[in-house]
Image (cartoon, rainbow, N blue to C red; front, side, top):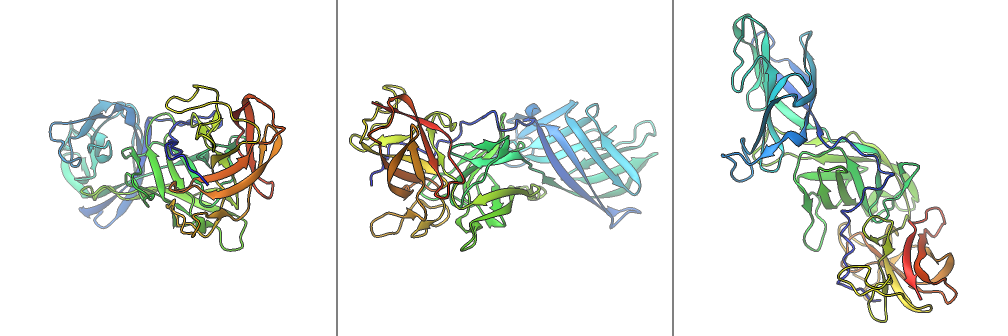
Length: 430
């Protein structure tokens, strides 16, 4: 079994299929809680929600040092907020896009202090012309004044980000396959992309041999089990987190399940007033095997990364993939391609690892997929863990002698039970 180490299969940032729902990339939501420590409402607590337009953030203030603390990014403008609502002691408080707020961010663009209210300025809540005014701040708490009485009640405030997993937003990270606009079933051990609302954190990609349990202060769980993380892309038209589905998500002997998935944005060190905020759980369909084929470009719609074992070239039209030797592969030639989603292996692979501890370095899929090349069944010589690539599987085949020729011959892998077929990638055959 051969691996072309120069071929990277983890460059999965390019996506944007029409079946993935777009979100409002400018809106980030939080919940907050305030607890009165003085005044007649001392000891009582209220909570509410607010959201703001992330596209208005300007980073790099004069006091921005070490990536923490205020003044790394600010916005002080009317129309910043899209909503704020809560009720305390039978009094309703709210802001609309017509109101003014002030936000402070750290160097990563994470909100560390909102200060918003009516008839208030930064650091004060002076009564203006005897009119009621109030403000909320993560550092300063909640302050309220009425008819010249400052501090009618004051207290502490804490912020909790509210990430959202988009409908149909959990898909295989090789194929990005969706069924009728709804995310399709995924398998234990596979890499998946989870499309979300914008996340209040910085972008990140894993480095090292193993996938980490958290990245850029983001963590993900499947049925309460931590999922190793590949990448976090928090902004742009399609924010997403890429993770590996834990192998343990299916119990021994279990072939399918529906499990809750939660994306959590954790607090930044030095910003204790930002609490860990988890998304509302979204159910994901888990099956024993659900292969997706890696392609170039990395959209699930292009040329498969199928490597000719005779010369390590990629079976694609000549010169079609920059930086790689490409030419059509001959019928009868042995080759391998990369997928994600073959499911459990023997011997077992650890979550987040690409290492196989078998004496022959082969960790086989418990059930081999079937492979069609141009609609013709191909002999599968091996299917299992791709050495060194967490969450990535390798399928070795022989190109059928009667396979069709051309620059766009279809390549499809189907689970052993026939229930899930991969995306239809292409290869070049001569």
